[in-house]
Length: 106
Image (spheres, helix red, strand yellow):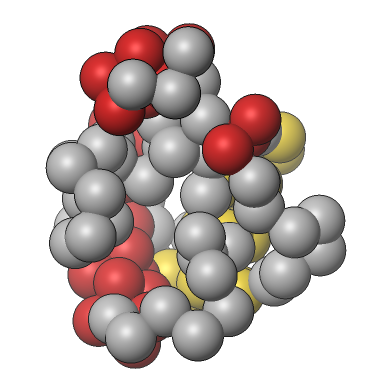
């Protein structure tokens, strides 16, 4: 995960994102490796660049809405943006070791 933090709140944003779980996999989106970047700007803009486990994810809209809502709850964030990307394509190697152990992928 890349963090570019002009506001000094990226840790708080990451903590909020750790409360967002993929509905199909009982692991948070950070541990799954779905969050590629957290960017904050002095103007109060927070941007999360993330992906999904599959492009045709049936709950994509709900997941992105939840990420935007959680980021906007962080003190100092005036505008929360979520950008979806599929480059690089997500795969199981992007998960944390803890997530792979929890899901039996080791």
